Amino acid sequence: EVQLVESGGGLVQPGRSLRLSCAASGFTFDDYAMHWVRQAPGKGLEWVSGISWNSGTITYAGSVKGRFTISRDNSKNSLDLQMNSLRPDDTALYFCVKGSYLAEGIVDSWGQGTLVTVS
Amino acid sequence: EIVMTQSPATLSVSPGERATLSCRASQSVGNNLAWYQHIPGQAPRLLIYRASTRATSIPARFSGSGSGTEFTLTIASLQSEDFAVYYCQQYDKWSRGYTFGQGTQLEIK
Image (cartoon, rainbow over all chains, first blue to last red; front, side, top):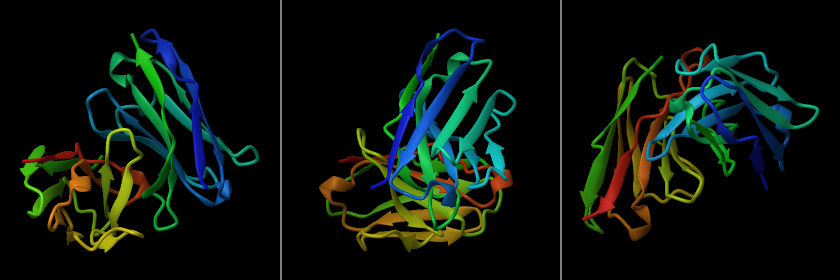
């Protein structure tokens, strides 16, 4: 069974940094693209960033480009998101999600999320 | 960045009736379009991919259509468990990102 467990969320002041982590298990981690998706309070889903299986392709949403950095360590089955220069509108529940074998951008598994509050 | 726009924001439909949800892309995404169902408190579930292919275990009452910039999700004969938020997502190319629409809340009339 696929398990994705996020950690690292919390309350942070505007302009500060936070690093989120995701521990993956139950699948061959280095076979799949991984992404971060967030959901602000009362809002919809927003794709934040994605990374291909070998870190060869990395993409960001325009709202976070230049401030967030995604990375993965296939030897540790882990995915990270370094968030710098945080703003109040970055406040959201951040989900670690797994890309599907159907296509790298399709999401087939979700973590429970970690809450980031910028205030 | 491709912008996905869903309409309506909220749709009120009676059980047993049909629901039609729309999704528009700001640029052509071919047929690289997925639909997800999100029930609060649960993980979103993939319903449709490649614009019209049902994912594993998705009932036949869910169908998708469209290509390019205009897409539709149709739910025939709504069941009680279908009332949820529905999102479209384009996954055309890495370089364009994988944007979601803002969602359509399907509620019981």
